[in-house]
Length: 417
Image (cartoon, rainbow, N blue to C red; front, side):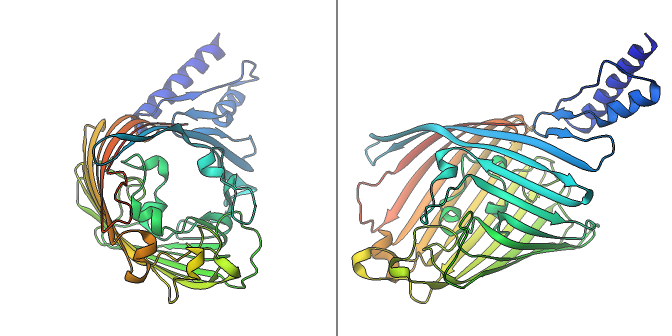
């Protein structure tokens, strides 16, 4: 009875402490058979912690490894309408279904991250025939909080919107600008340096040397690599928690916080039309692609403001006219703002515009493409359980297809453990 009372007391204290730290519920499981009070304490410390939105963490007694298991899904319904508001397309599916494993092995300084995707959106077969289920598979050496180096496959740290997880967005999905110019994932070496956290000015540098053909490509015959660097400035100090990689001002910054960042990537002898993405260039051709990015974030007392500018340049973006293949060279600008009410409801507005270079406009099918989106999100457990709806209006100047869809209405449920 004493052990039972002690167990209940410790469990109650743990739950109370967790409630103070976070609004996310936490459950601790312990074994029924315990030898003594010391063993009881050790068992409570080493049993898995289960938190909605934070995964299931396993830690053995000797603490030589740790593994956190997470999953997430996005169920989507999207309706597209033409200029006369006639329904032209209905999209209803599980857009994302992912399983993730993170932790360390042997030492907390040796960190790994594995992420798998299971929907058609994630696993579309690559142009070279390879399967595409693996999204992340990387090992990091993290000697301290200042710097780390990784080897494997993961996101290229280039633009802000891509660094943000798709689970932490304030719209149903990222902008058309990001969709056109982001670098996605690749295989190679990744490094990061951060100045020690302090009040006032902070900075970070992220860099990578990768294959240049994108995730799960395997073998490249082009002989080139991709070189990417990103520099981040925090002139007024870092954001609370992970405010720089989570959209919306969830931590309700009491002081103005700002991020100004720029990135550049050079993909030498790329074989795919979009560098790390897209179809193969015709006739085994290769091109040198340059991608550039500039980001700005401001958050203050529930308000959030973002600006993303990005683009791609190529000296020879066109190929044999019979192939209709081209490198989308040009630039794009995305501006979005939002306000969060009581950590439950958020209203957001986004305006995105694509500007293809003049020589590729006939193949792109427009002179420019502007999309305005209004979104509403109901957060139930932060970004881990939320309902999202948004409506977009599209306008393409000098469009080659006058019957393109003008309106899009989307609804999505996000659930993550």
